Length: 254
Ligand code: PGA
Image 1 (cartoon, helix red, strand yellow):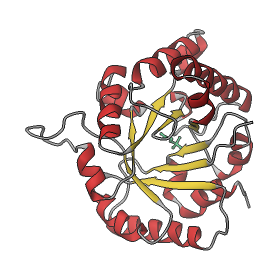
Image 2 (cartoon, rainbow, N blue to C red):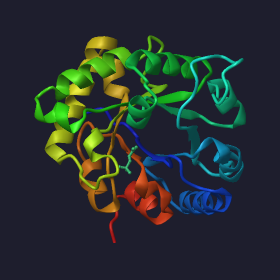
Image 3 (spheres, rainbow, N blue to C red):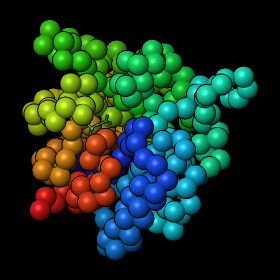
């Protein structure tokens, strides 16, 4: 069996002013410094305004920093956009693309997500590409078809197992406290891995990390992260509390 190192990624979304962000990063960094031989990597994706400060605070720890989105343009007259090169320049190593909130609220199609991912990879960032079905798609039996299309059309040609992570986030489980059952998660992750195999070959499929996201908390992390094809978590709400975020990483619930 392929051993893939866990990635515990925090998506802060539009949360955090300077002081809260500072405290959170200091606490996570000090947790990492005092954890011997962790079997996981940790990543935080703060809002754009806090990325600079977060990179500076995290620089002596193993904590990675990422953006929550990037533009598919290089630069120029794109008011409000942030480029992949800018994220890289300020110290990010990752960027999330295609989060369901961006797909739903900002009209991001699979094609746009693929362009963003391609640009980020060209700039030397790693990408976390998000996919996931709505509740309606799940109950109407379209779940796997939707995910198949999202994975196929959102994955850029330059994606490899080293530079790309896929996050499966059922939309109905995000921020709702509802988590997919371990059986559901196992089924979808296995499906995604088999699809990566047909798109990119067995070696890439064996090595690519697949994260689960959607109401991951300390009390369900152990079970979810022990599933064979789950190689980490993309955590929203619980990543805003260092205690919970670190408990997810260690799979301890006390
Ligand atoms: P949640 O968010 O953990 O608050 O459900 C997950 C996400 O949107 O990435």
